[in-house]
Length: 409
Image 1 (cartoon, rainbow, N blue to C red):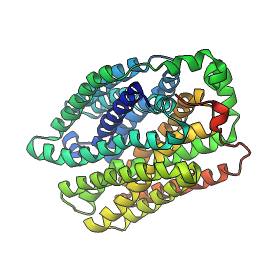
Image 2: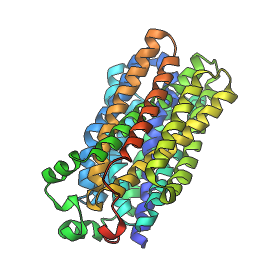
Image 3: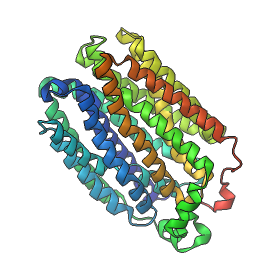
């Protein structure tokens, strides 16, 4: 990897760190926000869903643009939008204001995943794709870990509003970092001008989607992505609130559970992502789904910090390995010129699950008076996702070999 590629990978790490810190700050601060904003758990789910609505609408478009335009523009403009949205969350005083501001943050975050991993995979040798994506995605885990560790300190010294202002400022600093480090790589442009080097990206957009949408493996993997997204959002949204309201833990300990999930997810990303280069992507993705399901179910029966923490670590381990494996899987079964388009469309499906999840889990908690059934639903969807992945291995389409694509940038 040359200096330009190394700079991009560094900027990508910082981008995922900031984006996911902001995304999961919501769940960490939610126990403090609920009484302050006087909202129900269902309404809390609506606020989080507003983020995912914007993220879902914009991600496929930006994944496609990541294959076609200067990535530097995307990674300076959209983090600025992310930062403004997060900063304004600190001034929200109603359900509507919080929903609008977090939706703005979701628009900014939509450029901080699909375009990033798509371009990064074009800058490394094929045999290192899983490791590279896992490293970039490690920034997401560290962002979650940092949020869970820092927010209780900020809340204790100031308030939950200062927590939002802090992560908003962090995103604005990211704008300057990306402006300095990110450059459009020559391989991006040449792969689009020469169809022999590309894939779907050298075809008209309609032809690209026509090819993808006829592929059963594309749909099976994408639907499993949707279900795992549904499953993983539930604990990240409501685990701290569950720990405070039902397990009766102090807020500081409840927030620490998010830190534990983030730390465990880092191990999952680095360990399972690298292992998938040897053992295969689909097998490791199925394992991650099972681990997520068991972790979600275990949270239901925990009434002490120690046991709840153990299942939180298990959940984080499986969840952490999931996302880089899906991103790397896009290059296993589809030509490299279409990576951004594939990841972007799968992110659309992931977003659908993420939109439905917090509202559904919050509504179930409101009508039953407990988060028990919400976590059980998360377990069930994770297991179904693993079954879909297993079924996808029975298809007739083989992974794209490096020799059929040419050497990556």
